[in-house]
Amino acid sequence: MILTMIGTLTASHSYAKEPIANSLLWKISGNSLKNDSYIVLTTPSLCEESSSLMSKMEYVLHKVKAYYTETSINNPNTAIETEKLLRINDSKSTLNKILSSKTYMRVRAKLSIVQVDERTLNNYKPIYAYNVLSKAVYPECSHANYTEFLFRAYAEQYGIPVKELLSIKDAVSIINDYGNDYWSNEIDYVLNNEQEIKQTLASKAEFYYKEDIQGINSLYKSTKFLNSRYEHSDIEKKRTDLIVKGIIGAITKESCVITFDVSCVMNQSTSVFDRLESLGYKVTPVK
Image 1: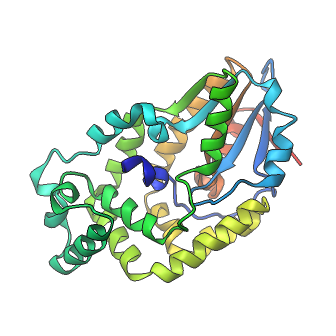
Image 2 (image 1 turned 180 degrees about the horizontal axis):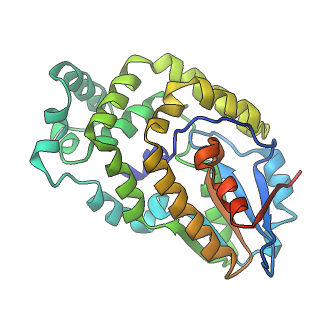
């Protein structure tokens, strides 16, 4: 069950200062790279792929030697490791201890509908409840990360190695850094703003299908559901550092396609693209 709702687990929800070009596909070159590599921006809660993105990918995929996801957290083969890392190891951090009694009762009622019992609810960190609640406001047809799912399936079909930029431990470490207070507030927000979140996700999906990055940017600037993590810029920068380190390790080794969440380029101070360019790489949109 964790894998069915984990798509929002590591998504960086920081808002944007300056929009970037309208493309989901970007080429990385320069800095003495022997071959070009490509970045594809993804987002959770989609029901289908962007047809314009897939059309452009036809001219790219035959060039690459490996596919890198942001983290292996959506990989069914690592589900057991993910599940272990999300378990509570501190009895003071169970959900019934960190939420108000009123909020906890509401969460219990919501999760019982999807057959999550109270014992399970208190066996996992609050991110678990948050993601189950978030999934409830996503479109029923949505996949945790549909674009990543398609790319992984393609790579496995054609024998292209699938690798990760971040380990599961790194991804869960970032989640832990936000702390219980942050996740408690996020749970409250999801419970009290379901219709607003549904509208935001529907708008983001439509912008994504059209490769309208500036439209997505406008949502990150104006919507609490998408920008609440920006208050923790030190954690966001830690995430950027880890992703950039992984990207450089990948592109200096082989020509590859890399996917990560669009939120990683939505804020200038923590933008993966800006960080790569500051290190001498050239990141350009593929039209």
